[in-house]
Image 1 (cartoon, rainbow, N blue to C red):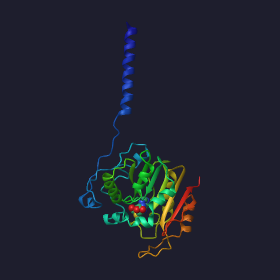
Image 2: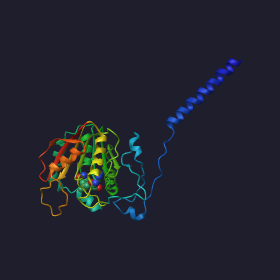
Image 3: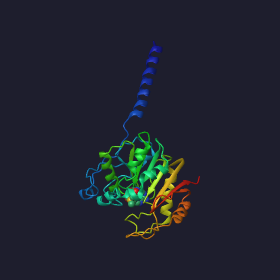
Image 4: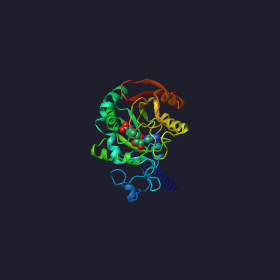
Length: 282
Ligand SMILES: C[S@@+](CC[C@H](N)C(=O)[O-])C[C@H]1O[C@@H](n2cnc3c(N)ncnc32)[C@H](O)[C@@H]1O
């Protein structure tokens, strides 16, 4: 009799423990409450519906992301827009006349992007390259479109609504760390960003330590065999708005060397841009 009671108690104990385990595994993970920006902030970009606030550590913890969600730094009224970009400028980046100079199809061909690969379009702006990468990597691949500008990512988010690509993930970060998960990227791509001077810093004054910190984060996110491609306006071109500090390709290569990257290929295909491919020195 007492043996039966003992067995029953043991079974109750086992059932309770298993239930507890299941609950621990399936319980909903708390997500921070949505933030609504004040009306004056909502005017930035094109869409007023701002309902995301995602801490950076979610990116590092292997969380499942919803396409179209903006991950990375939380958007709070205190930290809303470090580098506002007006919609006209964002539209300009997509101007089809750019294709002649930029040759995006040729750039992508030369990068040899495989189906299923993960590409990070760092400083994606309005996504001139993002959608092309999304097509290149296919449904089994992934494109991280990152930027320090919330208005750029919000603009990109609107484009994603109209042209849904389930393999594009948006990430807001700051200039010191691209925040992507470790070893999550086969190709980091940076076009017209390397010497882009965000409004909080006077042009040409970004200290080298910042550049190093930023590229260290790029190293961290590259998978073994991963590459970094930098496209940057040539210092030699005549430009009605030449900005101070534009670098020669040799100077960019020297900077990147200091950041732990070695040049593997310089593609002489774009008339007014350097197209440099690097690998991290391990
Ligand atoms: C001239 S736009 C180029 C946009 C896009 N790459 C293209 O080719 O159309 C420069 C972009 O870089 C972003 N940016 C500037 N500094 C950055 C940084 N440290 N990390 C990521 N994005 C940055 C800006 O917010 C802007 O969207």
